[in-house]
Amino acid sequence: MAGSLGLSAATISTIATVGKVVSTGVGFLGKLQQGNAAAQAGNNQAALFARQAQREAEIGALNARRVREKGKSLAGTQRALISGDASTGSNLLAQTGLSEETEFNARLAEANADFRADESRAQAVLARQKGRFAQTSSAFRGGSNLLSEGVSAFG
Image 1 (cartoon, rainbow, N blue to C red):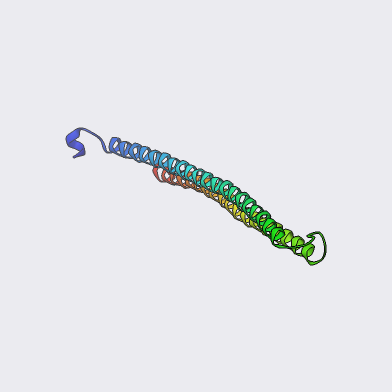
Image 2: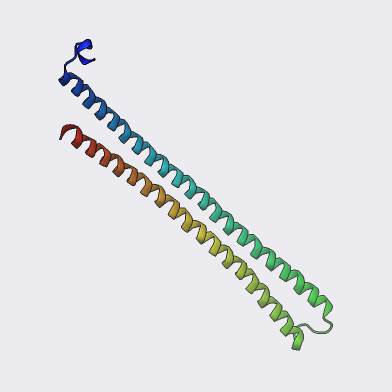
């Protein structure tokens, strides 16, 4: 067939080598694009986790505020039900205990929300890193393929 086209074996070999080099170059660019896509996916996932962390913090603040408001309401109800002087004796102890328990519950709600927000922030960092590692790995794989094909083509 080479003879029917008027091409020598050397010319056909050169065309095959050029085709292999072009194919390898396209493969390398594909690996780079794959890595960039992985990095972008990691950044998108990180952004989602960051928004989730913000939401958890807001929910924690809201829950703490609700606990404090409920505690104030209960304290008012308790004062109304207690007869006599609320500033002495067991009445005072009941008021103090309720206030302490209310504040404890509010701080617990904040601490739980902070924990969940920190967890989401950590997930964001991990997602971003995973994308970067995938990007670097794709570049190395593409470069490795490029080098090995170059060695086999010209070596």
